[in-house]
Image (cartoon, rainbow, N blue to C red):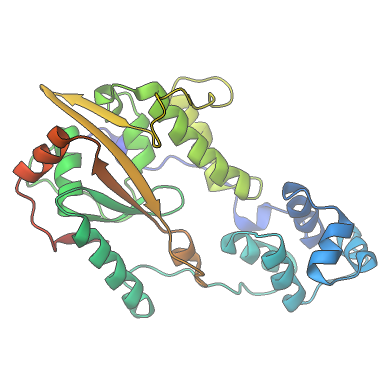
Length: 293
């Protein structure tokens, strides 16, 4: 397997480098959300004068105030931790591995959803689309697309990036008949993630890497909305005489208070026609089997 498909080549700033101080972080996020100081004051119950002092560095925030502003401005949990660090506080939201005992209930729920999706593929990825969990149909589908031996292991340490697998010329892309539409949608997905992060983020670096893989010099192209009124983006696969028409759904976990859980995405693949459904059923995948990191 080419190293490009498995190994991350991202080089990003550390959280401490995102902002020089809390004032810069607050100005950034208020501008990102399009809030005036008056609107932020109204929505947060913090005086406009105090917000002005916070942004100029004349006042220092409390930990509770930072957390309140994080909620009002809908700042990702990871970036709220960055703001706390910039103000000299410890992070408020933990980031744990999926095998942490405290995440047992979450993993159990994801295992259940993955099992229920069989015989169709389902993946669990983080916010950068690094592979975290997958069911047996997803493992078989990936091995088929990438010409891997049936008994070859798929890394489960977060080093497999699903978007890079899709976008790399020597990956899945060569089998995607509507690669331009799919590529545009994938790039816009990670572009939204990059816009939700602070400057110097991993998502911004990944967007640049994916854009280079796609052979683009500038911003990602606009998605094609002329799809014969289909309510979803089809994924059209053509390989070795097999024609598959699929679409996907994305599921997130509600009201998480953990960075890891907040960033998980479950992508489920569904057949868009009877022939595609039959192809997956005939491969003999059993429900109730999933692989987790």
